[in-house]
Length: 126
Image (tube, rainbow, N blue to C red; front, side, top):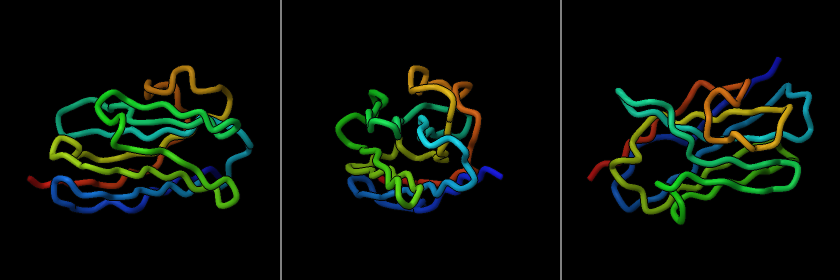
């Protein structure tokens, strides 16, 4: 059974840093597109970043470029999101997602992914 479990969320002041983790288990595809999304109250789910595990190509949303870094530990099946220079507008529930059948052509679209974690809350105070 496929499971994606996020961890590392919490509260931080503006300008601070936080690292999210997503542990993946039960996935049959050795290479896949893995993504991070976020959703603030009353807003749609926004693509934050993605990585193609077969070649380590990375993709970022405009609002996080230069501040967030997505990475992976293939040996441990863990996806990371390092978030620096956090802003109050980064406050949201953060989700990791996986898609095993395609590369990351549609990485920023929630419908592109077939597997989702339960989310972890990130709160940035001013």
